[in-house]
Amino acid sequence: QVQLVESGGGLVQPGGSLRLSCVASGSIFSIYFMGWHRQAPGKQRELVAGFTSGDSTNYADSVKGRFTISRDKAKNTVYLQMNSLKPEDTAVYYCNAVGGVGVHIGDYWGQGTQVTVSS
Image 1 (tube, rainbow, N blue to C red):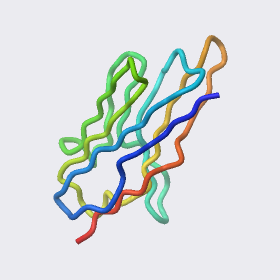
Image 2 (image 1 turned 90 degrees about the vertical axis):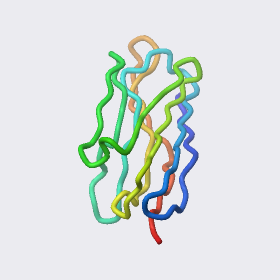
Image 3 (image 1 turned 120 degrees about the horizontal axis):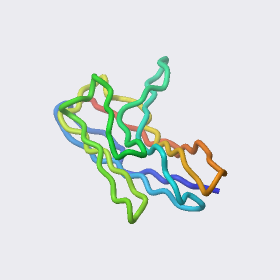
Protein backbone atom coordinates (compact mmCIF):
# COMPACT_ATOMS: atom_id res chain seq x y z
CA GLN A 1 0.00 0.00 0.00
CA VAL A 2 1.00 3.58 -0.61
CA GLN A 3 0.16 6.55 1.55
CA LEU A 4 0.31 10.21 0.57
CA VAL A 5 0.33 12.77 3.33
CA GLU A 6 -0.14 16.42 2.46
CA SER A 7 0.55 19.51 4.50
CA GLY A 8 0.79 23.26 4.09
CA GLY A 9 -2.68 24.44 3.20
CA GLY A 10 -4.42 27.33 4.88
CA LEU A 11 -5.90 30.78 4.54
CA VAL A 12 -3.93 33.46 2.73
CA GLN A 13 -4.68 36.89 1.36
CA PRO A 14 -4.65 37.57 -2.39
CA GLY A 15 -1.09 38.04 -3.57
CA GLY A 16 0.26 35.86 -0.80
CA SER A 17 2.16 32.59 -0.90
CA LEU A 18 1.80 29.07 0.41
CA ARG A 19 3.91 25.95 0.10
CA LEU A 20 2.32 22.52 -0.03
CA SER A 21 4.21 19.33 0.73
CA CYS A 22 3.35 15.71 -0.01
CA VAL A 23 5.24 12.72 1.29
CA ALA A 24 4.76 9.30 -0.27
CA SER A 25 5.42 6.22 1.82
CA GLY A 26 4.89 2.51 1.45
CA SER A 27 5.43 0.20 -1.54
CA ILE A 28 6.24 2.76 -4.21
CA PHE A 29 9.63 1.93 -5.69
CA SER A 30 8.87 3.40 -9.12
CA ILE A 31 6.95 6.65 -9.54
CA TYR A 32 5.61 7.47 -13.01
CA PHE A 33 3.73 10.58 -12.03
CA MET A 34 3.61 12.69 -8.90
CA GLY A 35 1.92 16.01 -8.61
CA TRP A 36 -1.03 18.09 -7.53
CA HIS A 37 -4.63 18.39 -8.57
CA ARG A 38 -7.25 20.70 -7.16
CA GLN A 39 -11.00 20.83 -6.92
CA ALA A 40 -12.99 23.97 -6.30
CA PRO A 41 -16.63 23.85 -5.16
CA GLY A 42 -18.90 22.95 -8.05
CA LYS A 43 -16.01 22.29 -10.41
CA GLN A 44 -14.23 19.25 -11.71
CA ARG A 45 -10.90 18.20 -10.34
CA GLU A 46 -8.07 19.57 -12.46
CA LEU A 47 -4.35 19.01 -12.79
CA VAL A 48 -2.31 21.84 -11.30
CA ALA A 49 1.25 20.65 -11.75
CA GLY A 50 3.14 17.41 -11.90
CA PHE A 51 6.31 15.47 -12.66
CA THR A 52 6.32 12.61 -15.12
CA SER A 53 8.74 9.69 -15.09
CA GLY A 54 11.00 11.54 -17.50
CA ASP A 55 11.48 14.32 -14.97
CA SER A 56 9.55 16.75 -17.11
CA THR A 57 6.99 19.01 -15.51
CA ASN A 58 3.65 20.25 -16.66
CA TYR A 59 1.49 23.02 -15.34
CA ALA A 60 -2.05 24.20 -15.82
CA ASP A 61 -2.09 27.38 -17.88
CA SER A 62 -3.80 29.21 -15.03
CA VAL A 63 -0.84 28.72 -12.68
CA LYS A 64 2.14 29.06 -15.03
CA GLY A 65 4.57 31.67 -13.77
CA ARG A 66 3.03 31.65 -10.28
CA PHE A 67 3.34 28.06 -9.07
CA THR A 68 6.47 25.93 -9.00
CA ILE A 69 6.60 22.21 -8.41
CA SER A 70 9.75 20.62 -7.03
CA ARG A 71 10.70 17.35 -5.43
CA ASP A 72 13.15 15.48 -3.30
CA LYS A 73 13.41 12.03 -4.86
CA ALA A 74 15.34 10.60 -1.93
CA LYS A 75 12.46 11.52 0.37
CA ASN A 76 9.64 10.71 -2.08
CA THR A 77 8.41 14.22 -1.43
CA VAL A 78 6.92 16.74 -3.81
CA TYR A 79 6.36 20.41 -3.09
CA LEU A 80 4.15 23.05 -4.63
CA GLN A 81 5.25 26.62 -4.11
CA MET A 82 2.31 28.89 -4.80
CA ASN A 83 2.98 32.60 -5.23
CA SER A 84 0.77 35.51 -6.24
CA LEU A 85 -2.27 33.58 -5.11
CA LYS A 86 -5.66 34.61 -6.40
CA PRO A 87 -9.15 33.98 -5.03
CA GLU A 88 -9.75 31.60 -7.94
CA ASP A 89 -6.96 29.39 -6.60
CA THR A 90 -9.23 28.52 -3.68
CA ALA A 91 -9.76 24.77 -3.72
CA VAL A 92 -8.94 21.51 -2.05
CA TYR A 93 -5.52 20.47 -3.29
CA TYR A 94 -4.82 16.77 -3.68
CA CYS A 95 -1.48 15.05 -4.01
CA ASN A 96 -1.49 12.29 -6.60
CA ALA A 97 1.06 9.60 -7.38
CA VAL A 98 1.07 6.84 -9.96
CA GLY A 99 3.57 4.14 -9.20
CA GLY A 100 4.34 1.03 -7.27
CA VAL A 101 6.58 -1.98 -7.31
CA GLY A 102 7.15 -4.11 -10.38
CA VAL A 103 3.87 -4.76 -12.17
CA HIS A 104 1.85 -3.63 -9.19
CA ILE A 105 1.13 -0.06 -10.23
CA GLY A 106 -1.55 2.02 -8.62
CA ASP A 107 -3.07 5.48 -8.70
CA TYR A 108 -2.88 7.00 -5.24
CA TRP A 109 -4.39 10.12 -3.72
CA GLY A 110 -3.88 12.08 -0.55
CA GLN A 111 -6.72 13.22 1.68
CA GLY A 112 -6.55 16.78 0.36
CA THR A 113 -5.60 20.07 1.94
CA GLN A 114 -7.72 23.20 1.80
CA VAL A 115 -6.28 26.36 0.29
CA THR A 116 -8.39 29.48 0.73
CA VAL A 117 -7.39 32.79 -0.83
CA SER A 118 -9.45 35.59 0.59
CA SER A 119 -9.12 39.05 2.05
